[in-house]
Length: 190
Image 1 (cartoon, rainbow, N blue to C red):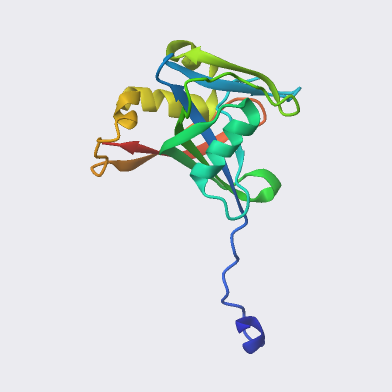
Image 2: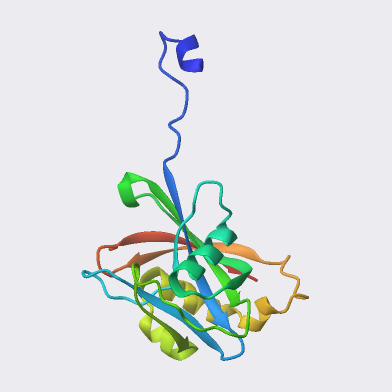
């Protein structure tokens, strides 16, 4: 309405953001002490990453992580925390892109993988050291920062008071596949 109300002046209405929101799940099973990684069906790029995908309209970030992990791997999970996110201004379709990483744990002791045959080429549980070797780019950075600063037990203990945590920002350069660019990464620190 404001643009029609003042038609003879330059508009003061800001361009609204065209932003996509993606969410990945760092799924840790404390019983077997392994993390869940996937390889998407993509003939150009074969890399291991956290399961995840785009948020649906009106969907909360944690709900997206839980839904995407279930869709891609068959594993039902519980959200423990958002552990990191990045903001990129050169995302798909010329949009800005937020990508959140959530710590999830399997909701049941039965963590049998049922891979989505349409989207996923491979899905496996990896020991922590082996997962570190297979991850690349942003996923590897988040995983290494998380392991460097915390133990998984810090997040799994519901009595843990995380009110003293802050977010740090750092620029990393992703050098893998079609995603060669600088990315600003936000990580939680104590």
